[in-house]
Length: 564
Image: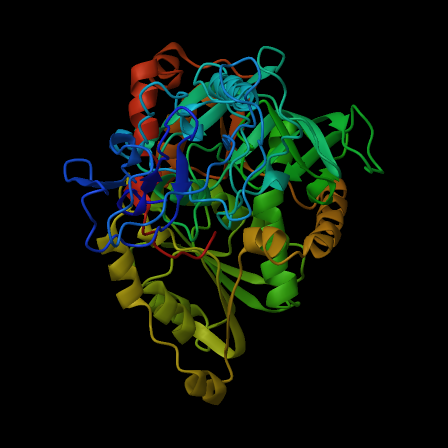
């Protein structure tokens, strides 16, 4: 009941007639001398009294003055159903048929008890029941446990969102939450916020446990890809919330099995795709993304296998349909994917490989590529000098102005495949100018022109194929073919260098500078060099808190991208 409509009636004998609430009594028109009307402007309450207390018994009422209410036994209505043992009357506890609205929490709206009468009941909202108190205590205890888990020195379940930005637990495992103090911890690389290298640190996280259909893997090595740089900068579509554990591929030993997992045993050597969370000592991932590895392959080589070779194989054989006698142009021929493409092309007779790379890499990769060109030269004219008709397949991870050049080099019935946009990464943090420049330089593709020239333009994103489009069975078949080629000694991952988890900043800087020849690997068991360890290991609590507060605010609007 609002304060402006509260009416208080009391009988002639205050001790006999209790305080009663009426939602809307009849208005008092022209009250006589025997009826007292008072209005308390300060408290916004109109107090009506029948006024018989001051008249002698039997005195007739003044004209217009209403009759007093009939005498009735005291009736109190209690919100909490109390009464016995607390000084309040216990009779008639049931609510009336039409219960009034709850009183306002303001002190002004509370009815005042009559002098000498029973005390007015306190409003129900002023009392806290024992059930409410118990519930509040349980919530407080639960909150404290959550804070302990998320503490930088020993918290967090390490299960970031998926590649699509949805908090996907399948990518990082994380079964039931262990109780505080009972959870095992692990080392992991944590991205506290999108931005530069200073957003990366090695922290302690709660070790995940496998859910149904998942495997728990003790990680030995994990791969570093150019897509990881774009994730760090926030140059991805629908990024997950930070802090998160980066990484999409790893190798290790099966440590535990989730429910309904068949075909694997504890102790199996495996390599796996993960929907984030790979850069840690332990990771959980669905069994559909896990593959057994040969006994003679090292964990470092196995960690270089999934992203690079599956991407190369599917572009060449599933999308472009590579056959004998064809020609292929590949950009960044010295990188991990570029070397995988060159090796797979060598498995098909009479395939000519044109490659672009930085000049200092030419000596190291000249055996795997038929013709090499400097990345800064006009490679279009150089290719046409050798093959006037152009090439059958163009594999582009650069984007920007190279898109138009690649399309111009295609033969009739040729295929251009875009599988990355590394030209967008020019600085340590994301640059809208670089994105706009690359987007502006991309030739506007006219479907009619493709139709007239008999050319094919395609795109490929392995992570989207796995985690968003559900083609894990196709990837499994590809992986079986790749392992067969490895056993036949036809392909072998090229490792550029091994880095400790604490050296992740230096490893990322190397791939950012395009200084690698082959794959960069994070070796979980490797000890960092002293200088790098001091720069990349756990930061102070104040610094961590400051970075965590920055969080996703830096990248509320993220640039779309094509994954490499």
